[in-house]
Length: 263
Length: 263
Image 1 (cartoon, each protein chain N blue to C red):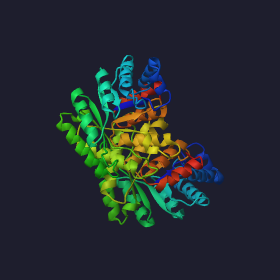
Image 2 (image 1 turned 120 degrees about the vertical axis):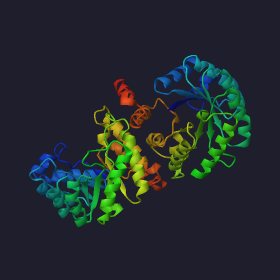
Image 3 (image 1 turned 135 degrees about the vertical axis):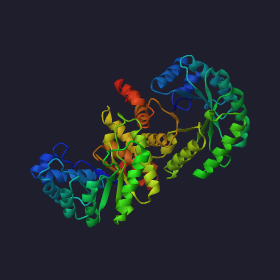
Image 4 (image 1 turned 30 degrees about the horizontal axis):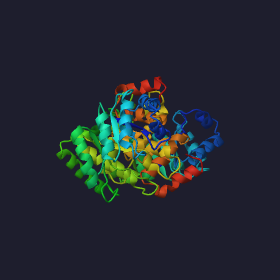
């Protein structure tokens, strides 16, 4: 499973300032802490600094790579910032993200081809996020068809079935689970990915909902998550989920995590 | 969903003594506390007192019914104790349990027909608990066929796919989930049920595994559980799961549980 640390995002507290001041130690510390807590990839987003986004992205990627060696999700809708991050990235890179919107597709797809990297594809188009499973499957199938025709392999594609809050649409989580199950069974080798926090927007005790949603999404076959790896409870549920799904032979990782006091 | 409180079981601390001393207040208090915590049915088991099991069962059912009005699971392999409990039961009763073992079937099945009650059916036979999904499905199908031919409706049948520990068999939870999904999609209106604690036998941090297993089982379609309703974390996950699966319109129960400080 790909567990992507979400905390290197300039919309989160402290990051924007650290980027502006080129506080490399702050950024590197947060990168290391996320990996130590169990993330095996990091999302990098400097979207709040519009004017300098590409230079900031370049600096961030360079800075992070000095201390950790893991896949990086270069997170921006801006093709120039994406190119800057991809050019700096020495290891595995994943573009976050493309959609079925024609303009975004035209500008981002050539980067994925040029850099032979992974790509997150959101099931949304010019009309926004569709409500049901069928409409999402239609967009997912169209995205997969376009990407694979350009030579991108299924194992480089991460479909995000777009999580919306259950506060406004009570079928929202079920739609995510069903879309995930259908994508994973229809396209062998492909990945599905999502962030956790949208599901609980507008509701109290959001962490409880996010945690429960996380376990259900894993159970539905989702194999990649963008989350806060410093949330100890979330990481405990991940270790337990892997043991329950038979992905942890003899529960060896589970017992190790217990002995190390991580769960 | 049927949430069965498991605590009125003479193998648990304090119960055997309370039964022996006919301490009705102790039993009634535990019955009420389980219902207040969110259980909507209660399991009743006095299996430790072999010589007096039927009289003890009779007293327990009478005692419990004086303070709560909910379905009772009359829990015994002993046909005499089952009959005693069923005779006393004024409301909905569910026999816990029958198996595909010939002798048990011969003695318990007539009680289910006579009392027109629900029945828990375990997917095991003379050879014990089978390993895989296929063998469990075979036993489940045979049980369902025998029960329905006797006039028992699908909505009165609770199939227990027999949870075993992941410590000894790493595919154990997956087998439970897959068997549940297949039973629920093949027999519309039927129920699936399980206890939570066997899954983690022999492992540390058992509550974490039980909780994670619980959420995954709900997500797989299981609709009945025998559990400890006084485990607050478990009940919080239940409330969150119902909201996520669209079974709680406008998240009304979830918000109510939050306001009452229950989650």
